[in-house]
Length: 288
Length: 325
Image: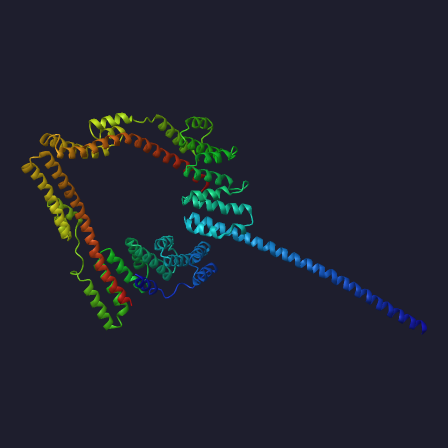
């Protein structure tokens, strides 16, 4: 995560705007000597005292960066949600939106991140917007839009590596290999898992890929039926047999349905995580 | 020639005398100049001190304005950090110092740190411009920590007879406290003091009357009847107490156990170990259910008052924030 953060944070920015106020310089000084908490307040003060929206934006971006360095990424996202993008230069608008997207991504707020990145694609020229493609691909991966993510990465590769045909070819091959439809996770439908569990106890878990769970549920449900049958047919304790058998059957039958749904979701998450981690490694490797 | 020589000598002597006087005057002047200069230096240093004080005051005022901006942006942690950094000893003006303390208390109140907020609000000077606001907030903080008598004492000390809105706000707070203390007599006498309705408190004043009516009309169900009903049909006592979902849970557990125990009695006999064990389990659930039904009557009463208390406190907070946000 640190590698990805450093790569994604540093690469797209050659340098922030040179427009600075006295308050901003003071905040920068505090930040440079390690007084991060004081710097956070000073950046907020710079935003408060700013005479232009550009200075305000720069101050808030830097405040968000300080908050992130203190592992307060949620506060960073909240800080950048206060930005006003009106009348900003293209480069500053890019920096602001990119940071907003990055912190939203780090907070797993993928929809918000995708929205900011889409704004970059819509409102800014390709030469600027192209830098955000790798992050956009990461976000789209999380949103399970792998084909769209592949397209972004291909565009990014074509833009930056067109002069070096060997590198272009190797990256294209790596992207194609990673995003083949065979490798993309097949999703288990939680609703379908629940329906299977209703029809045949244990089959929902089996559908989700959990064999032990499926076997355990099947055994317990059958035990309930067995207790009832034994009570009625063998022991002649009709009431006791039916009640106890029903209690065991009902408990595991209902719980089995809920667990099937849960396990389908769990399986989906694990599959997605494993695949997306692999893709993330690929993207960060290509960024290097 | 003699005359001319003596004349020249006289002129020369006069000149030297003048020169001497001039020198002595010069030296006197220089002393007075030094004194003036010293005075001037002293005055300049005083001006510098005054200027520095003014600069410090302006800075503190600006910082307080910044705190207000932070509060309005809902950056309470940042505002608290700035207020802590503004050392109170260095704040020269009493009014400004009170404002710093007031905002510290306000943020503590907002962060639900009521004990610290009470300490802040209590230290406001008696002639401060934020005195009324801090007194109302102080009282509501005492309400939050269930120190109702102290809250009442603070409110009674607030002198707002000349301000109709704040007078109504004070009455509302006192009425709320009376309800929280279940002191209906005091509530009625405070209700009689309301002369005009104000926009600030109108809705909450009416709500308080409704709460009082609800409290007075509430009659606790009989725990004996609840127990008896549960003895006849398990769970029915809880239904009588006012619960709707829980009774079925009690039935679901107790009735099947009763059926199993009954079957065991019929098939194995009263002296069988099987019946004794199953009967004991059923007995525990049966008696527990009756006892639970008795307690459910008290629990329902507690729930009723807790909900009303919550609503009363909410309606006490809202107009204070409306008045002093």
